Length: 136
Image 1 (tube, rainbow, N blue to C red):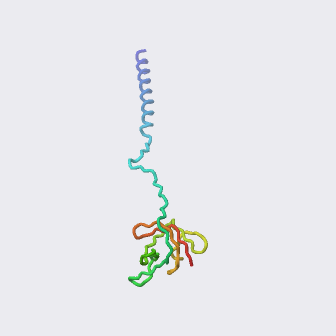
Image 2 (cartoon, rainbow, N blue to C red):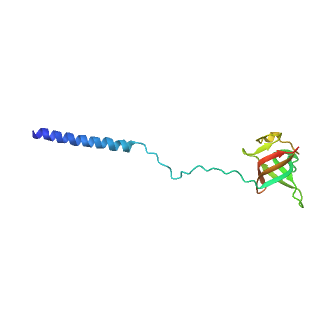
Image 3 (cartoon, rainbow, N blue to C red):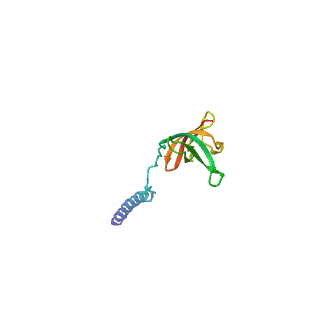
């Protein structure tokens, strides 16, 4: 009888340890997704603020090398000052109205010497084009 009692006690203790081990192991072995310490919320870029609007002539002629360039400039006047120029930067948000409809700007459709009204964001001597309206 004492032998059966010992076997039952060992069986109960083994069962408890087995249940504890399975439960603990299940949680211990489950993959835990940790957030990295450098987790940042996605940054939403704000649209550029329009701080420049002028009418002038668009050119891709480089006066120094006397050749056509892939870069475009706007040649414009400020009253009382000599003619000025500013480099044009086109991005995926730039809109051009070349023939009565707004569409993403395609520099291949621009013509050297066209008159245009350009609105954009001026920083230093570069203008990120927000909207270009061809006038002629």
